[in-house]
Length: 424
Ligand code: BJ8
Image: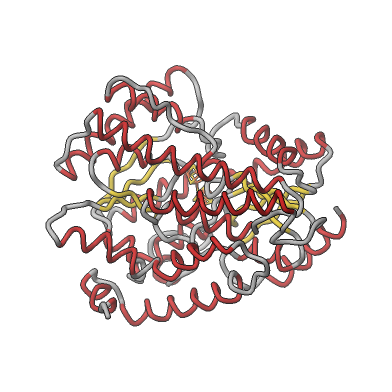
């Protein structure tokens, strides 16, 4: 039996507090995921991912290092940090835990009380020393996106080595060049960290590796247009969350198996929810592990989430990077251009996001759109006004919600969601 407590202790974690966290998350997983009926058998892979998230997965990344394979771990908090670049320089990129409230009093010594829960979450996880991804990361790559994260990174960098990318907030010829420079600069910084040069072969292979994962996710997503829908929104959300933590090639294999099974189920009319269940398209702020509560509420109330226009959803997989770039520079430019198209609400204007939401709602035959922002996320709350208008114009029922990570408002949230599901 491998001694995970020793591993966590060696990483500098608060082992006792972490045991408490694992207990809570394990219980959540049990009541949210394992009570689902008619899950595709291939989702058992996800149960393994969840069970190994803080143990087996960390061990395989960290063990590699101690065995003389100096694989550096690069943490990130945003879709804008290109994994292709990190992989090509011989490191592994992981998304960092920010999906639960932890040590809020400690976090409030660094950021104001009324800060978005995602930001407070990563400050709390770091200060409470309960995230093995944060603790094992050699470098954390932040990004100047929303004001909250931008300023919180000034604080976080006091606790952890950081490198910051500057993400533009408008799209034009100037910012396209600026962003390309940012991606080239990241490549140089990661090369410096790993001592490994990015080569044509390594970058081409990294692009293919990420594209294969994205293609598998596209296949899985397409099966969700069927009624009955072959797989739950909760399981699909976890699949994308896993894409930020699990080994890429292994996960891609598992997602393709899920897609195979779901294609078959769709053809045979087998659903994870009954035929005619109210179908919801989610849009809004990202959901970091273990933030599953909204999908759980929707699906326990008899609805089913058929798509998610967000960073833990279609924005992660809908676009690929061209695989025919001839030189490292050309491929880095291609990567930059692909990432600049991510429809984050930090951009102005951001009509593309609304177009995507309406397109997805139609393709996936959604009965309604739920647009949710984490509380104090000004940019997503601002966009909700035009999102509602776009939904109205398209004739699709729409609801906006604002939530945080606490369970306090869950009763009210459930009532509102039930009413929406009945109305649509
Ligand atoms: S590309 S969505 S992952 S920035 S919820 S911390 S925006 S106050 S997460 Fe995001 Fe990158 Fe954009 Fe995606 Fe700020 Fe809002 Fe909090 Fe947010």
